[in-house]
Image (cartoon, rainbow, N blue to C red):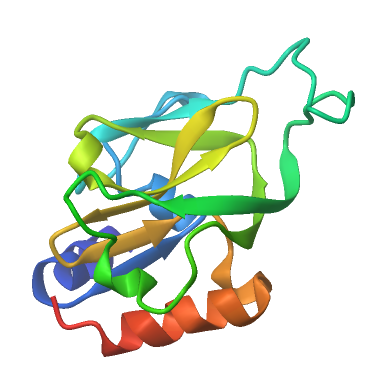
Amino acid sequence: MFDAVMHAAAHKPLMGVCVGMQMLLDHSEELNTPCLGLIPGEVVKFDLTGQMQPDGSRYKVPQMGWNQVWQDTANGNPHPVWGDVPDGSYFYFVHSYYTRPSDARHSAGLTDYGQRFSSAIARDNIFATQFHPEKSSEHGLALYRNFLHWNP
């Protein structure tokens, strides 16, 4: 698997989803796991103990549900894979960990769940999401369509 992912990352557009996004960074707190190092940064476990959501309920980990994703414009413009997906669209998440890229320019999407975190990352020919586009209705399908037409 390692060789296949590294070959793809070197030669063609690569998309990672959920754990596929997490494995692109340098290191994960989950079982103290080294990752592929394609995007500098780390994967960190949510620690939301005692924090309350705006509706008064406690934050749950793993987070399972719909959250808004804000297109990160640290590089001046939203990443081209966002295309016609409206900023602030809702996507479906199932996760206990989040990514923390070392370079803010690699963040392509932001989400708030007890704290703000990078829910999409990008670098060169790589685009990855913590959320599941395949479970995210029309916006998720649009994201996949945009990725298929992306020419980095």
